[in-house]
Length: 190
Image (cartoon, rainbow, N blue to C red; front, side, top):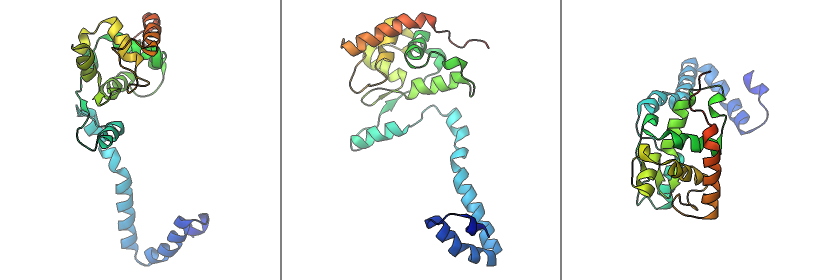
């Protein structure tokens, strides 16, 4: 019997009570099983939608909206990775993960595109397009190398630091990014 294999827990007790009833009514059991499987697979139905959507709401965006009593929703504008200054990508990778493109797995370029469009750069500022316009009043492809390094510098704590401030934290991390950026090769051939 299936339920005898489960350790004593609330789930095992529940299965012990329900299993005999389901055995008597096989159709009901199959229906409930199919419903359960469908319920568990619902998130996978969103994958194609996420791939073609130009706006994605992250849990952090929802958290920020709740913190502000839903008076505003964080702004985000989706932008293709090819419309971003490559120095921004180099700056981020130099501070976050220099070996990013050498990991095995999913197409690393899509992940990076999702990241730069969803990362928080200030209170309610999500995505590189919003950040570059807010802090430097320009489009992401027009950012200078120094501006890219400053944006990357604040990623670990964007609510405490601003890319346009001259705090010790921002200056130190900006300098670190500028020194490492030339060693980053974007989208290397394997």
